[in-house]
Image (cartoon, rainbow, N blue to C red; front, side, top):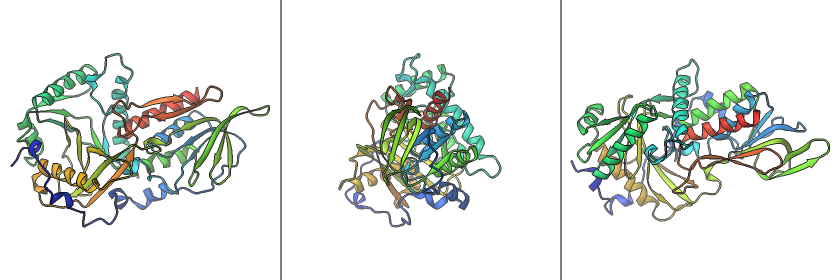
Amino acid sequence: MQPCKHTQTSSTSSQRTSAAQPHQIPWWDDLTPAAHAELELPADTGLSQPVWDVIVVGGGVAGLSAALSACSGGLQVALLEREARLGYGATGRNAGILSAGVNMGLSELQADDPLVSLWISTTQALQELVLAAQEPDSLLSAQLTGALMLAESKHAARYLAREARARQAAGLHAEQWTPAQVAEATDGRLNVQSVQSALWLPNEGRIHPLTLLAHLARQARTQGVVLAGQARVRSNEVITTTRHGSHWRVTLHDGRVLSTRTLIRATGPIARPNARIYALAFAVDLPETFPLFWDASPFTYADFRPGNGRLGVSGGRYGKAGGTQHDQRYHAQLAARTQCWLPELTGQEPSYQWAVDLYVTPDLLPELQPLGEIAPGFSIEGLGALGVLPGMILGRQAGQFISK
């Protein structure tokens, strides 16, 4: 068994293709009819009232969370999604991982940095989702599994030690583990030959992202949010009139004009992408308790979703948005990396492989940005490659600010 960090991709493996690809993205194959129904959006659904309290642009996790939060504050809310159903954006193309915080080390932040609070709030949101998935007739598929960060070098091991101390100081659960403990927790199926140390994070989990959208859409409809599909926004501008005061005029691509006192833009990281992230999935029979795992440096995420017999993988290097002739090679490198960590997959072709184009930068951090200075509004920014939980938190914050 070879150490994972020495794995090289041969010219033969770089030409591999996925022979069994009924759909490019696996999530759609697992949905129940009830979840499918919640993702469908009518094109014309009561958008004719004179002025809305809030219009949310974008039907991903952040947009739905913002709409729910604003509606719970007693406001009349409409959500506009450009597609005919939810799930065609970044949420429906992700790797299905529930990770607390943001895509950087907690040890890299100062103790008084506002971003530290994201680890606390996203951990709480994760627990809420896991509990909601256990309710009768829930559409949501989410499970707490824990995760392993694996260090294959002395530098990465030192980083994990710092990260453990930072997480513990913030009141989060984190334990440093030996390779032997990793082997025991994974029933010897994970290749630990190159592992020097590991960080065990019990408050991590996996989720079926389309069920999350269905779950949030059901909640939004129940609370009275109007969800409209095929509502692509062409422009938005601030208008001042004697009758309505300062408000937003939102013009759709089909010529319809809507008015709203407050605008929340949650179009996500796919609006102006600059990089491509790769993903694939292998068919494999692992226990439901098998943890998420990824290597500490570089980050290559891999997780198994119980009940569907797959190991989903996302990460590795970024490619060019829109794709190049190197895409297949990048997928092959990701497959080879996965087969090194889980040797029983050696020689097996991935059942699915896909990619998503996102806007990402090295210093990308999630935040709410004000829109204009006259009419109130927010733009939810910085969610590229950061997962669903920061989007939920920022969406809720936007709705709470508007409801005050």
